Length: 302
Image 1 (spheres, rainbow, N blue to C red):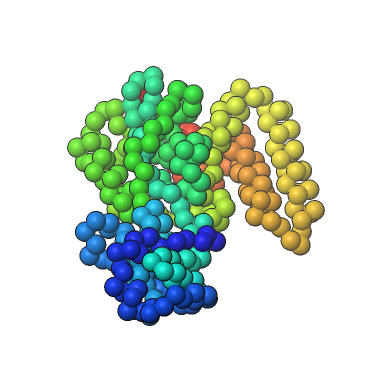
Image 2 (tube, one colour; image 1 turned 90 degrees about the horizontal axis):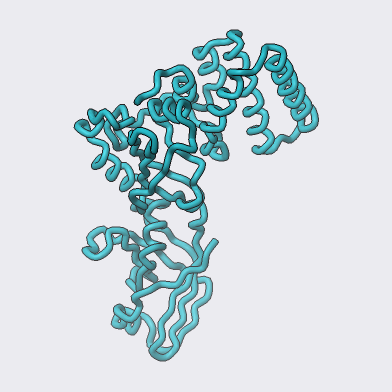
C-alpha cells in the first residue's frame, strides 16, 4: 500500500475555490480515481476527484501503473484533502505493489547471430529478470546446443501495459521477419500469436527457470545407468520426506519443490526410456512443458 499525492492541483484552482471557501482538512473522505479517455498529453491520465469535482491527477508513472492494474475502471477510496491558504493537497492510499512490468526483449546467439524477439511480463524489476531467456522452441533448442553462456539478452522496450508490449512485439516480429534465416521466431508477434492451451502453474511458479532443466537433462547424457538409478531414488526419497513432514499444511514453496523433484525424476525416466514426452505432458498439465521437451529432442537452428 502506497500513499500518493495528486499533482496538477494548481491548474484546478477554480474547482478548489468552488468547493472550499476556507481552510479545510478533511480526513478519511471519499476520493474517486477516474481514467481520462480524451487527454491528449497522457493516454494513461487518471483524474483525482472529490464530489464529482476535478481536483488534480495521479502522476504519470502512478497513472500508468493504475491503468495496468485497473484498466479503464474508476476506483473509490479514502483519502485526505487539505486546503491551507493557497496550498491545496490531496493524498490517498492505493495498492499498486502487485503490478507487473512488461517489456519486449531480444535474445541473440553470439556464435551465429541468430536471434529471438519476445514479450515478457514479470513481477520483479525488468533489469532483475535475468534468468528468463525466452520460451521459443527453436531458441531453446539452440540454447541447449550452444550453451546459455553464448546468448545475450537485450531489453528493446519497457512498456506501460501488456497490451502495449504485445503491440511492440507485433511491430517487430512480422510475417516477413520470421522468414529471416537468422530469426528463431516461428510465429508473428502479438497476442494473437500466443495461444495458451494448458493452464499455467500457480502464480508463484510463473517464472520457472526452463534453462536449468535443459542443463539438468544435458548432464544426464554422460551419466552411467547406476548413477541415474541412484539419482532417481534420491529424488524420490527427498520427495517422500518433504511430503510426510508437511502432510497437513504445505506452503507454495514446498509445493514447488515437490513439483521440481517429480519433474526431474521424469526427465531421468525419459533419459532411461521409461516414459514418453506425451505422458509427461499429460502428467504435468498444470504447466506447458511442451517447449522444453521439444528443445531436448529438436534439431537446433544454425
